[in-house]
Length: 164
Image: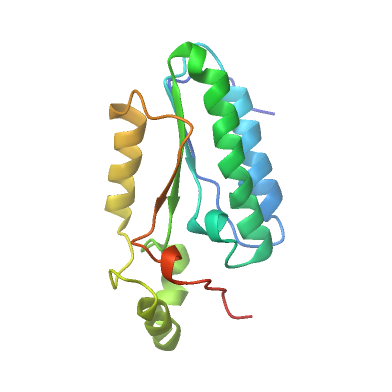
């Protein structure tokens, strides 16, 4: 089922969909990949890409639940790979300027409503997200088991739920 690859030193789980398969893809898929490739002696870093929704419960219920599951699973993996001197953290982004979010960014009314709730008045760029991932995966050697909310304080100001 999984391709045979050499032992991984870094695993970055970036599963994220918003449909009826949220739990299967976002949570169960992340668990399957991690268990197969990351929980082994050569691992040095596991990065889970979570979501601010995992902290707030906002947005679509299945999506929020799938990303909430990532929070506790991150701590579980961190404890199990610590004997290898490896780290595991979840980077839980708020809005990121991606193609997936393009419909939201192009809906002027919705975008303005979101920006009204966003203290920095912008979303994170893909490059900024990559910098966080690089730092935590490559440079970090001590911070582990953490769920790091990186959302420009958006979650602190809202209980935003996507319109139906």
